[in-house]
Amino acid sequence: MITLTQLGYLVALERYGNFRQAAKACYVTQPTLSMQIKKLEDDLGVVIFDRSIQPIKPTPIGQKILDQSRVVISQTAAIEELISEARDEISGELRLAVIPTLSPYLLPLFLAKFQSSYPKVQLIIEESRTSDIIEALKRNKLDVGLLATPLGEDSLVEHPLFNEPFYVYAAKQSALAKLETVSDQDLKNENLLLLAEGHCLREQTLRVCRQSRIKNPKVGDLQFASGSLETLCRLVETGHGYTVIPDLARRWESRRSGSVIPFSTPIPTREVSLVVHHSFVRSGILSKLIQSIKSCIPSELLKNGLSQRTIGI
Image 1 (tube, rainbow, N blue to C red):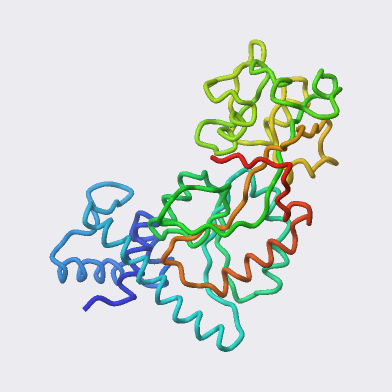
Image 2: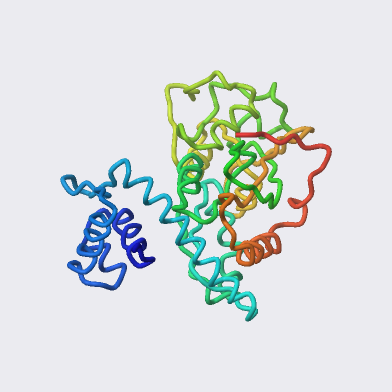
């Protein structure tokens, strides 16, 4: 008979890639964890993990078993949440992933308030790219993703939070800084600084600038792609071209020495949503997270005006 404890051991071993760390995370001895996983493999008649490589990896059939194990564990947690809701409690572990162009600006707004309001919730937060978050949500390795949407993924459910306008960020001495508003025609590809491949804001920036065919824009002799939006901002401030930043990043004006220039209408905007797998059933904790985030967002971002145009990813 398969037990929830054994399924928890499987998930831990996949996460850590070795028996010692997995056993420590499960608060059992290494021989106990190893014995239980071997017993499960013998009972099922399959090899779940390839132990010949380090870190240990699931076999093809093992990966399918792990994917289903996470669903079972998640569904079991939902039962516990039903009981908590009946007692007017919000508790349990919540695994949240945030894209890098949101995390430094959005997390500080709501995180302390959420933790203070729901101290029994154990938040596990990571920063990751959109494609990695989508894959983790599909495999139930994550509970919730904070992403730019729409994603166009049938297996995922999107809960829109707010609409975030884009701005041009340029050096104060640049020609762009002299403009009251910026249009597509004002932007030159040779001066555009971009995030590295794989970041959704990179593709959105190219669409905003209508330069989607450009793979590696240059600034004079400089060709640069960063994984950090703040790095791009620092380069702009030293006189290297311009970049496109979302509204929450723009609100760090006290930390910036460049010029923030709004776009002319219709203003390019991205939709920000909480995203879950369609099998996610912990509606109570999701609802509280949505409320906490919306309560901390500037009110103007909660409106979807006719003067905006949403830029997909």
